[in-house]
Image (tube, rainbow, N blue to C red; front, side, top):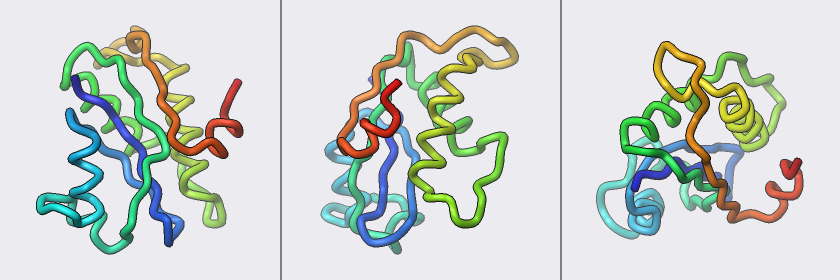
Amino acid sequence: MAVVYILKSTQYNKTYIGCTVDMTHRLRQHNGEIVGGAKKTSKWRPWEIIMVVTGFTDRSQALRFEYRLQRPKRKKKVRTDSTTFVLENCFTLINRGEGVAHDSAPWPQLTLYWYQAKYEAAFRR
């Protein structure tokens, strides 16, 4: 089943949002260990996983969530930490619903898997 993931560069204030069915393989691609990573991430290596969102009913729903997370309705302020900004938008998107195109139906029951305790503690509600 497809998941949406949020990566953070360990060297720069950069984040990346993606969708995959094999998170371990995809992270290795992003970090250049195997071929096929996104060109957009090659400049900011190495990457670490911040959070993975699971529970989508199909790949198209996960891709729709990824698309909406990549295009937030509000703009990032210049000095705002990019990871914090992305995580805030993720929670807004989940809480707002909009799981179905042109509808306000909620997303399915989504599960958040945290890989970085400092971000989990900051966003636990």
